[in-house]
Length: 292
Image 1: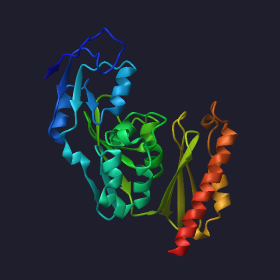
Image 2 (image 1 turned 90 degrees about the vertical axis):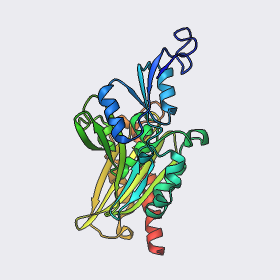
Image 3 (image 1 turned 90 degrees about the horizontal axis):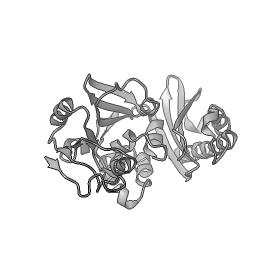
Image 4 (image 1 turned 135 degrees about the horizontal axis):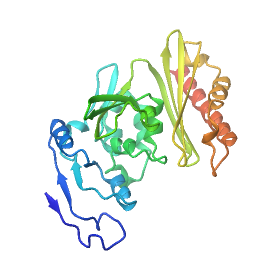
C-alpha cells in the first residue's frame, strides 16, 4: 500500500508531513519475519507513541511494518518457572493481565504506575524497551529482573538481557531485529520491588533471588537523564529477614559509577538517594515476609 501524506515536505517534520511510504501489515510472526527479511530497512510500528516522537525528531521511513495484527505477541503465560510476556502488550493490558497478577503482582503493580492514561492504552512494553530512551521506566523495572529479550533477526533467533540491550551489547546484531517475547525467571525469584517516589531524579527496582547457599540482590537504578545502571551483591543468608539491610544497601549504592551524576544531582547525591531507597525496600520486604 502506498500512502501519500498531505503537505509532504512543506512543514516541520511531523506524522502529518511525511513523504510517501510503504505500509506493510503482516498477520503472523512468521509473516512479519518474511516481510522484514525482504525489507530490512523498514521501521517497525507497534503502539506508535514513540514512533511519532521519532518522526518529529527527523525519522523519515521508506517502509513501515505494522504489528497491529499479531495477536500472538499479546499473550502473558507462566509455566511455573518462567513468565513470558508478549512484546505487543500495552502498559494497560499487560499490567492488568490476570496471569501476571497471579504470578508476580509486584511487577503488575510497578507496571501499572507508569506513563499517562493516554500512553498506557497505546504504548507497548516492546516499544518502550526498543526506544532506549532514558526517561522510560520499563528498562529499570525489567532490568532488575534480569529479563531476557527474545528477538527474531536476519541471523536467526537471538536472546539478550534488558541490561545488555540498554548497553548495546552485540548479542543483537546490526540489521533488522523484531522483539517478540520477554522472559522472566520466576523459579529463583523471592521478591521484587520498585520505587519511583524520587522520579525524575532517581528510580530504583530491586529483585531478590536464591543463589547457591545464599541470596542475590540485583538493583536497577535509573533517571530521566541517564541510562539505567545495574548493581548486585550476594549475601550469605537464606532468608530476607536475615539480611543486614543497611549494609547491603550501602554496598550496592557504593557500586554506582560516577556517570550516574548529572546536572540534576551529583553522583554522591544519587548514591545517597539509592542507599536510602534500597534500605527501605529491603526493610519493607523483610516486614512483609515476617508477617507472612
